Image 1 (cartoon, rainbow, N blue to C red):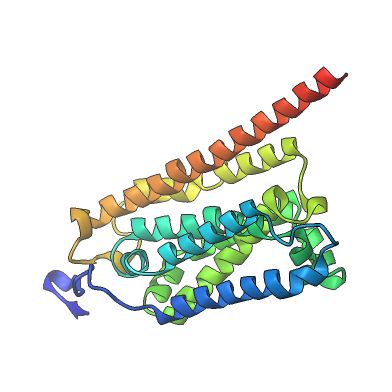
Image 2 (cartoon, one colour):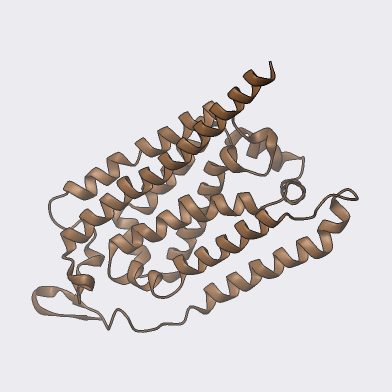
Length: 274
């Protein structure tokens, strides 16, 4: 990394391949844990005749692992860390909106109960997995991971970058737990889920608007050469803001619409039964 004309940082070819062994180790470790849980522990944890894991759970788990690799490995990770804040935003949407929800949908109830237990950990989780605490924790982490000083520090510090990703995924798991978590008693009723996700879709408007209409460079770490896809720094920031608001909002509103259809269908079925 060198300083070019007018102090602009020049970096190597953005499309050069870079191995991320830590990501491969993480993926293999998660795969090994899933295999051990389903083939060894699960057989003793479920009642006779009950499936250890369903086909849909296997599909959700496989999809989550693939998307985790996409978000954390080359080229998305390299573009997001060194060149484009819009790629950084795509990465964070995958790690906060998509992968955690898929992980929860892939987790059998018996496995969740073994991990959480019934002691203090379960009681703390039950208090946090409520509308207000879950919303505050998740959005506080989102703000933290998009704070300019934190982003600048993370770009130059690999362990910090991965640590922030772990924090983001953990907060996202808490946020999604009341919607699609494996513990039925912690899920909100469908109307509450819709209102809850509606609030989650509104709150990003502030940072997204800040990015879209900001004057000058918000994140100096991304003021580098070469410019990927020909996007200027300000264009890149605006695209990131649009991704955060439009893409993230559309994703959440699609889920809200799906929940509304489920809610309406259930009431129609109840009416027919009566």
